Length: 425
Ligand code: AMP
Ligand code: MG
Image 1 (cartoon, rainbow, N blue to C red):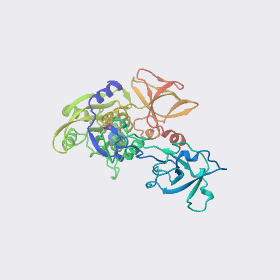
Image 2: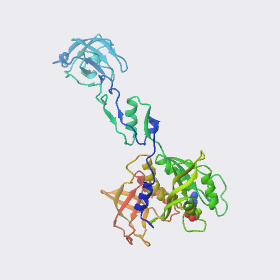
Image 3: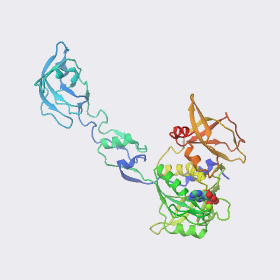
Image 4: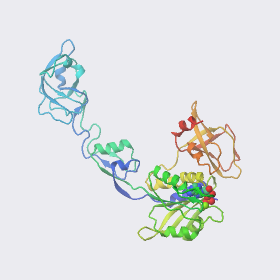
């Protein structure tokens, strides 16, 4: 049995950052930018008004006041998107809307509130300026947001909604990003029934393919659910040769010590096993290696294969610990680890066999301190414990357990779930 760290290191060593592709900007959300973005022009492209008002020469507003307005001749009107053909000469003004390009000759804006416009009936040929402005007031200068030629976005960053907006402001329709990994998801087990089929005696629905495929999409990769294979080497080998085009293969089940646990044997015969037990609970039986198969185009291939356990909780926890960081690395991400926090555990947890326990926990915050309580029964088949948990409380392998009140580290899975989980108690 190897440690969680050792297992993760071996998985990460076996996967590479995938290649780049050109993607529509909306589909780049959450992905890693694979080019530096340099601005081909200024944003905004030209000086414009930050407010609705009058474009003027600041010198013309000197000593203007409510009592002694300075009257200017209105020579034009401009809206956003339009341009003024007129120049603002001394003694004149142009009525302008927010975003309207600053007319030549003007150097500042007087907001409507600073004029006597409200006192005049209808569009007037003259406007009384009732406040003094300085050059530059309420003007947005060309390049104020992004200067032409500057590097706005750096290769390697993870694209968030703000970056999508910046790309659009530069007129970009597509952008170069690291491609998403394709992940084949394959459940094994004679007991499994497909959704939509009746549940006969002794059978269970195949939930693992769905929780796994959902996790794969959740982290930005592309899942492909393959048909369930039965617990025989032949059935699995035949499936691998039927055509798999994926950057990673995730199987569930068939990796423990039972009579029908054929996955690790097939991995051993059709590839190379890197490890098949990890010192953790849940999820001790988890195998990893490079497995041989045939791609959809008929080529012999070798793909990284994580043989996850069959139990529905184990499959999700081992995905979090090994598959998620591997997929993130393939996607060009550098931040592979989940955030760890320190919390006070609210109940005893016993560790009987020297494995690292990842207990499903609900973390909440009170008086500046995190507290973690378990979700209830911790059996590795209790999938609803994952619906309640927002974190995994870590009980070290070299301890006999922890007592209520002890500090533990918690790997946070979902910060938002706390309110939901607390509301249901
Ligand atoms: P195994 O590791 O293959 O022995 O599977 C352990 C247990 O996990 C089985 O007895 C099933 O109860 C459960 N299990 C295995 N595969 C699935 C699956 N695809 N969906 C739901 N439960 C599963
Ligand atoms: Mg099985």
